[in-house]
Image (cartoon, rainbow, N blue to C red; front, side, top):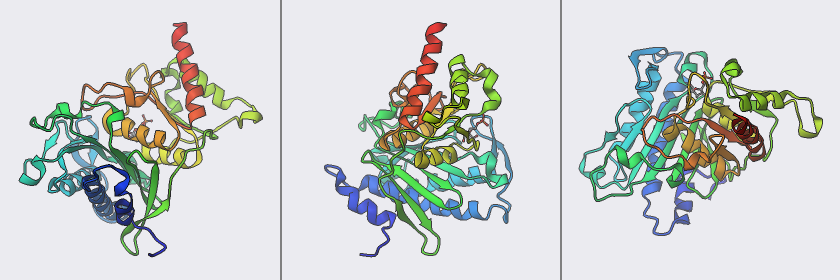
Length: 337
Ligand code: P6P
């Protein structure tokens, strides 16, 4: 056995974590790994080919699509279309779900939601960006698949993960049995286990929030920001502010080193900015599996009812003790209203 453990070797080894493992989830994860390698190739040379810049179209969010957004979306959809496992896809880039109607996929028991290239506005300035994915089992496989299959709580996820295209490219995922990270070795074209059994520190020294919106935040969030800036050596404060504007990059740093990321409701965005289905829920699954917490400020992210495909959700996520403190201040400010 080589010292290096590839993603595929790891998947096969861990496949028996599940009773009646049929290998379907393993096949999906392998397809995702392949798509990530293809996207990584384009991301890494984005400055050299004309994949930088705007695609000249807007996505369902009304956000200007970047050429790499469109490319990554296509790669993921096509990587999953002809397997036997996935029967429908929800993507940040598409208003409606995409139903795979080929013979293989029609009987698929799983559905997947993803943000193919989160933080893509950072592509042109070479800041790390990422792919986020979330996998559910269909609840009513006798019926024709529809958008309603995606209206599940995050606690029903069977797997979730992200790819971060940064100084190195990493795939980090969970199937509910802990979190493992794989770094792409370009010399062999394989994701190799580099961060086994990731655990997020209970506390950290950084807070990630867009302070430009300070005046738009609820009072409790303002109080937490002020708390982060107070001098108190016994609690390692003041914390350092670290905010890249790319959720995957900010969360990956906090997962490895500890910290908190907050994108709360604002007076302009009463449900925050980030999407429950393919940003908040998968990240919540990963962070909680690593020992952290993920809340709306009031309830666990993975308990939120999803009633719209692109539903937004406020999020406080990261080191357990930091999230608890932020939510304590947030809730107490609500009670004072
Ligand atoms: P703001 C990127 O557009 C994104 O969806 C996340 O990756 C990131 O955390 C957030 O938006 C940044 O938003 O409003 O602070 O620029």
